[in-house]
Structures are given as structure tokens and as C-alpha cells.
Length: 331
Ligand code: NAP
Ligand code: GDD
Image (cartoon, rainbow, N blue to C red; front, side, top):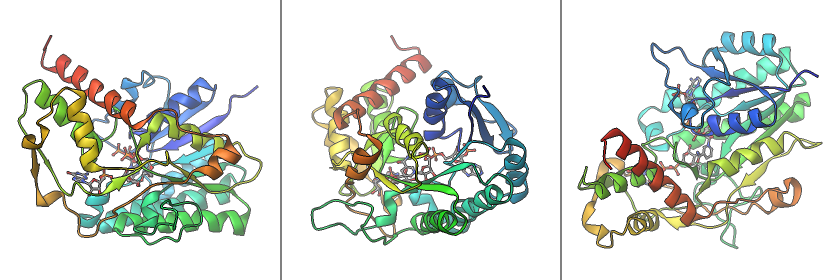
């Protein structure tokens, strides 16, 4: 029997490698979209030990012709659209580019599927950023919470969310939105706050740095482990009917909680002296409190997170310490 074929955009990012690993373990043939580089960076796939197991196809989410060609030739069973300009802060300084990738890119991909492979199942990486500062009376966000995006990133993702729903309703495509809350891992990009913290805590612990510069420490996030969240993506595409799901842990912590937890994990109690406020990392508009209610996913997909907040922080700090020791030849 022909193995199932999956096409993943964003294969070199954080979620792409975890999803690819999961699908390879399930026997899929996995194709990943990579942009044109003089030197592509396979570090995250190598970290998970699967860089040689993925097939790579060159293209770009902003280049409609490349997506048409790829979808027409692959006719994949499943398409996971994880590619994005995914940094909220950067979206304020690069709003046009962010919109081209995160909004138009989704439309290009859906059009390619509608025209050349309408039976492909489509996953769109939607986000808790869509909610902005809206919270239900019970203190959580769920699938019924109204959207109120607070950044060019979130506004562009709002288009992606709705165009996915529209193609599902108008053309009967099997197209779903995963509304994922923040999820992190040892291969999280270094300029997202969790990894920035664990990297700097590891540097400070090893005597390689003496400060970490951060913006607002008060925003709260619902942080889970990326390895758990990619399983939910796959489950959404295995259902009888396409639908949208919130994926979250249901626990929220402030950025300051994360900083404290990371420092205390390595035994540094007087951590406040290392933390410097830097206005460059403060955003023109902020989202203050994200905490997801994933009960629909639990009920319908049988999904629940496995890794706790404390375990996540420990896993990320340990990984950074190990990498730095290797790099600097520290015993
Ligand atoms: P990430 O680490 O930033 O990875 C994004 C990937 O998108 C990168 O591999 C990047 O490629 C690729 N990309 C960017 N522009 C592209 C373009 N024009 N054409 C093709 N590829 C392009 O993001 P992530 O954390 O894995 O997140 C995956 C998706 O989930 C994103 O859509 C993000 O917005 C969404 N999301 C993430 C979270 C989270 O907490 N992680 C939560 C909710 C939603 P290069 O490697 O070539 O730069
Ligand atoms: N990046 C960053 N750097 N954030 C900082 C810093 C800093 O130095 N200092 C404070 N923060 C605060 C941000 O203002 C924000 O409130 C919080 O830390 C988390 O920032 P990020 O880690 O950059 O993540 P995000 O919540 O803005 O966005 C991530 O999660 C979304 C899901 O809710 C990204 O992965 C998005 O792509 C994703 O959609």
C-alpha cells in the first residue's frame, strides 16, 4: 500500500520538525517546503534526528506558482500549513511582509488545493493571538470567544482563519483551524521569550553572560510543549468532519513566573539582579492574559497535554546548558 503523503510548510521552524517526526513514526512520506537559501538551516530537524528522512521541495508561501506546481505534482493526503512570519513583535516592524506570508500565503495554498487536489486535508496554524484581550467570564478563551487581534501578526492570522473556514464551507474542502496557545521546546526560536530566557539563564549559570534584557514581564501566557501540540494537529485531520479546535494546557503564568522558574531551577535565587528592562522589547499593543479551555479537543479528539509547565522549563534549560557546554567545551 502507498504510504500516506504529507506536505508541511514551515518544516525548518519549531513545529515542523516535531510534526514531521510524528508523521514519519506513523509511516507517512513527509515533504517539507523550504525557501531558496544559499545555506538552509536544518539544525532543528537534525536535533530531532530526522533531517535525512524528510523530502525537501523548494518554494515559498508568497509564490503562488511554486505552490500550484507542488500541490499539482504531490497531491498530498494531508497539508499542514505551519509557515509564517510568526514573531508578534517583528510584525509591528514588518507588517506588509507579515501579511503577505500569513494571509495571502494561506489563500494561495487553499486555491492550489481547490484547483488541483481537492481531496487533500488541510490544517491551518491559527493562534490564541486572535483573541487579543478578550476573555470569557470564567477566565478562559475557547472556540466561542470573540476575536480582537492586537498586532499585524494577529490581524494577518485572522484572515488565515476565516479563509480556511470559508473554503471549508464554500467548496467543502476538509480544512481545519487549530487555535493553538503558546507552545515551546528546546528548538523554539531564540527570540521568543521562553527560549530567550532559558538560553540566557544557561549562559549566566555557566558564567558566559551576566544579564538578560527583557520587555514587559507582566503578560500571562498558557505555555505547553510543542511535541504534545503537533499530535493535536494530526488528530484534527483524522476526524470524520472538519472542525476548529482550541489547544491549550488551561494554566497560565506570567513572563516573570517563567524567568523565576528558570533561574530557580538552576539554583539561582537572587535572579532579579540579572534581569534588565529594555524598552525595545515592549510592544506597541500587548495581549495580557491567555489561558485556553481545550475541553472540546479533549472530548472530541481525546487530546490532552502531557508535559507540565515545570517540566517544560526544566527541559528547555537542560537542553540549553547541554548545548552551551558542548559549544564552549565546558565539563
Ligand atoms: P517558527 O519556528 O517561526 O517557524 C515558521 C516557519 O515558517 C519557518 O521555518 C520559516 O522558514 C517558515 N516561513 C516563513 N516565511 C515563509 C515563506 N514566505 N515561505 C515558506 N516558509 C516560510 O514557527 P512555529 O513556532 O514553528 O509555529 C508554526 C506555526 O504555528 C506558525 O504559523 C505560527 O504562527 C503558528 N503558531 C505558533 C504558536 C507557537 O506558540 N509556537 C502558537 C500558535 C500558532 P525559515 O526557516 O526559512 O525562516
Ligand atoms: N519575544 C519577546 N522578547 N517577548 C517578550 C520579551 C522579549 O524580550 N519581554 C517580554 N516579552 C513578552 C511579550 O511582550 C509577550 O507578552 C510575551 O513575552 C510572549 O512573547 P513571545 O514569546 O514573543 O510570544 P507571543 O505570545 O507574542 O507569540 C507566540 O505565541 C503565539 C500564540 O499565542 C508566537 O509563537 C506566535 O506565533 C503565536 O501565535
